[in-house]
Length: 415
Image 1 (cartoon, one colour):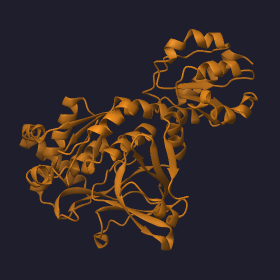
Image 2 (cartoon, helix red, strand yellow; image 1 turned 90 degrees about the horizontal axis):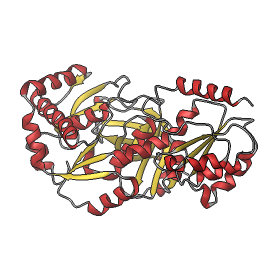
Image 3 (cartoon, rainbow, N blue to C red; image 1 turned 30 degrees about the vertical axis):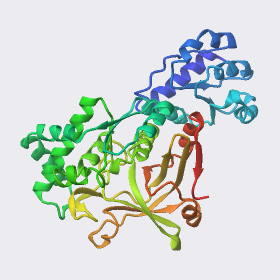
Image 4 (cartoon, helix red, strand yellow; image 1 turned 135 degrees about the horizontal axis):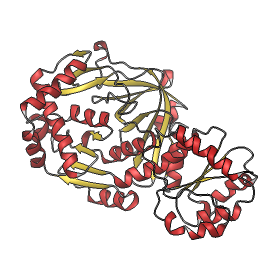
């Protein structure tokens, strides 16, 4: 084997994937042909988010062993004819040494990008900072999350939000409101004044995230902040939709578990999450996932926006929200990261988007998902609260890799 030719070939593959890998820094990029060479760079390996080990030829057992001794999440990528070592990979994963090893055995070189996605999610969670506008105590959860993932969750006071709200000029708020009004298929209930109040708060949220060097904000909108924020100033819904569309995060109801799941999905896919409440229909193996707040850029911040209406919040008949028409036929993944060591999920396909004016039951934004698996098993296995977070795409394998690397039990609720 000509190693120089192999390296050049893989470099071309990475060039083809440069759009998805534009945020990846390969701090160690070298050919290793002995365990001793790995030992010599051990200090460098201890600083990375993960290791991508590309298997070239037979006889790499001692080299892989030394790589795994670094204790970092490690993805082995091997195409056919790389060697016979793959026959031992499964057994190695059952041993302590291979506890953080995953493998992709494929001739599809686009999977090199998939191999790195769990590392990106690990990095995003570690660098993320969540602002929680609530008077409720969440200290124990925040400490657990910080210890496991590195994510900081900071409580902020209402006055900080009010000050940011008043710092936004009338001109800025009106311009942003016009953008949302002009982009809508229809403005049904909310007045122009209500939309302007919402966009003033939306711009205040962006300002707060910038000032706090944070990536996500959530508010206790149906609890301690309903009167002081939502009814006195504005509901946060358009502001949250806007942040999700920007590649940041706006999360309903101070749901910190959903905030963490949203960040995880963004790290794995570059796409936002849609927080939702479920209702089940056993007659056709579907689950309807609904929330008033929808994000228009479910394909990611640089993709086209989905059609939307501007509506009030259904059960309150107040505020302004984006009622989004998502894409029929789209594969989706639903998940919830529970605590720090459990993830529940299921997958399916959107078969209906009941968001016409004749569909005004439940919340404004709704998708009907045909479940991969058994809907009866899904509802019988359901636990740990109402909310799930939906993301475009079947992310089950990426989630499996991430959960292995972070020692999280992963349970498919529909099987």
